Length: 373
View 1 (tube, rainbow, N blue to C red):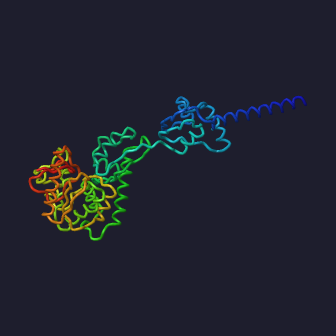
View 2: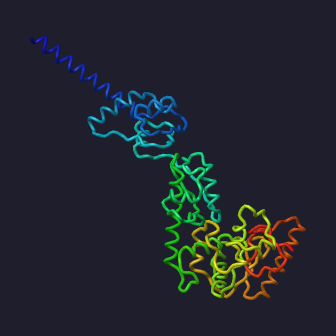
């Protein structure tokens, strides 16, 4: 009996040592740096298990012993009560990451973020084009009308132009397009609400949406950011006086697909809902996606009594502002002289040209192009 007892004790001790050595080896495999020398990218799909993901990582060269890592996790789950989550998304695994570090990335959901940039002054159609052609986005709105898109967003009956904030949006791969649009819509609503709370007293319009319409015009007319409040002031003064806005970007918007890069006299005299030469007041909707500064300028305009502006022609995007038509016509003449000199020198002028008081018989090349006789 004594010999049997000694033998049992030896077996238990050997087994304990073996278990300890085995556990130590598993733990070492779990926390030791991995074999990869470069960043490894992996897309984790919905419902994938720890075993599946570890096996994929082994094939990609990021994990040496996937089975050992899995066994260690099982032991840790029983002893520590924690099992890492495997969250969906695209991950970048840094070179030399241990299985412990990799699974921490999955558990915390630190996915690689894609991005999409919407430029201030672009149109909703431009936004949709970028969404439709972004490879990392899940497309649920392809082929749908703008009305269907707004319904999918939970805003049926609203017209989309101007309602989405231009910004750089970061998101996980496979994010649905409708979710990104929702982020942009909510961002614009916040920006507009915040600006409306800061509005000047006695503005010649009554709603945040009207402020958004004016902001979109300011965005399209501005060449120098510092001029936004002054340009807004010129338009607000015109609205107060009952004058037509006479702004080319709104005319262009109204032309739609028929716009070929030139504004002609017939375009200025042909009535559309967006022709601010033939109709008084603001156009019926925004004409672009305005940025924060243009929105603030629309609700806090700098009114100086000036109701005309024309590009200086110096190439910096700046304008000459005038209180009278006579002064404005002189400024237009000066601009044309600058333009001719630049054209003779092989230089093309860029920047907003004019608002209001366009001399008869002139056409404009582009919303922000050059006036020619």
